[in-house]
Image (cartoon, rainbow, N blue to C red; front, top):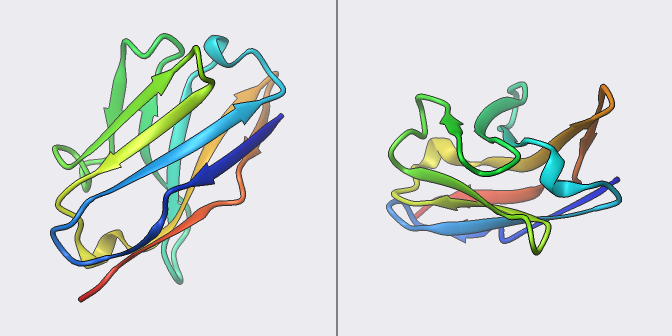
Length: 115
């Protein structure tokens, strides 16, 4: 199993970023996917969840209405569209999948929201 995140960077408050997670090594369309984040000095926080078909999603209250998770099962990718970014969204963002009871993480991508 391999997960590779991309799309992070530096953005001003109020701006947008789109993160991507490319998955391989498992049958992507069979598994729900999650985005987490970890800010400096904090534990990892679940940000968004999407079912294996993409028909169901869930969000942390802190990002609801600003972030959108989506997936393309033909391309084995899951994305996180982040709008109206705030400084408190600054963190390393990770995608995660649980396959046969084991959690797999990507290497993470840094998102910094600052003026």
